[in-house]
Image (cartoon, rainbow, N blue to C red; front, side):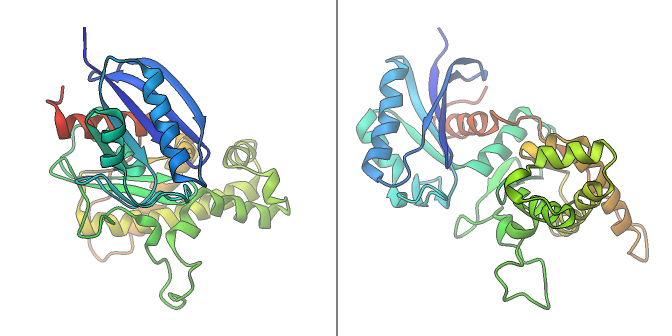
Length: 302
């Protein structure tokens, strides 16, 4: 019988979990509501998942938003899970569950999934840019996640997008490159309330010939292309994979490539174009990457 692992992905609304083996076979999947306002209750909910998963799991892999030191399992914060502030999550869960525990940032888990079994599996140096409420990511050097002195490498949301108005907190990639930025732009252009729009609706409108919706996506793609172009010259990555639910839209990737082509003509002599692709994994990427992190920490990777 293959060894099994409990893999947990903490989101702002739901905690998703799965029992998996090292071949990424899923034996069980589920989700519960995320408890965000009380740390003890939040931890009890994770322990409850473990108790339901059975006695045959040999480790727990945790993925979560927030600033995380994966080498120690210390969570400085948990993103929108406000009760997580300066918590030794690995130590607490190991004590409660008597199993090896690993903890990693969710966007880095998405990058790990891609370098292990996804769109970056043939790369040595790569970037995963994950588009969601904000913009997370992972920088991969020699097939290892680059974390940095303060565990902030790959936190693309904090990148400034302006020079003239750099002190404006609204001028960050989180505000310009997250999916809410596209929704706000379409809301203004089409005079539709934000509450009645989503990324999917905007792409549906554009695919039906709505020129205003297409122009909004074009501007969104341009903002992302500028930063992808900058990343390429900083890192000279083998490939950059764009992830998050919105990346499943072929129109977005096509427009990003077109905007990169325009930028490429700015230079006085030919320079390499970034190799852009979509992430292979979407809904399960954090689970797969968290499992990779756990195996890399405690086991022999398959």
